[in-house]
Image (cartoon, rainbow, N blue to C red; front, side, top):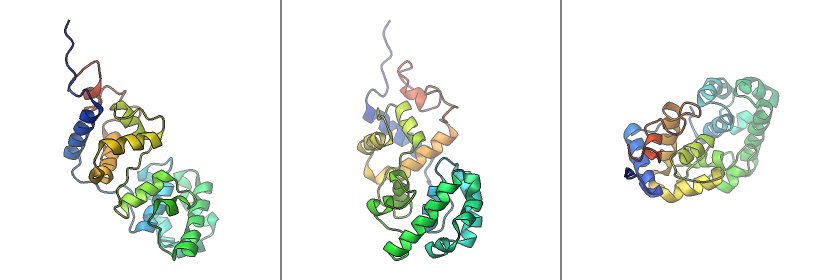
Length: 219
């Protein structure tokens, strides 16, 4: 029996197809976290660790009504920050991080959120993924933030064999032009939420996974 030829036999051909499909589905890429400037975005991203964007957006209006600048945030007691952000989970650590990063922004950066990866990653509670989100969404610097779900999608779509998010980020950056990184990472987030959820797709059933399933061979 003759095998059906694969429609997307190479990693690059799969990446090109992903890019086309996601651009058609999500021509616009609004930022999911409500914010008004780089500082409020930074705080929202810190809060989003192990928490949904929806829950963060429910919590931040109260927090930002009290403190929407580093100066105001640093003036709040950590206990007051923690009380407000408790629904986001990990509130003791996040409250300390938000208070600490606010003080450092004032003391080391003149009250402005720093614009480099290195300086951002020196802030409490800010890792490479958080820094990438701020650099891409606040400052429009080309970046490809990879969280655990984007890591999962890249594996399902056979775009990366990365053992961790760092390796997956490297692979995705090599496959897609820098000009689309900022929008593409958001498109992958939207698609993952709507069509290829952690438990809702077994790696074979959504419109993209089914294209790249070796047993099927084509869309």
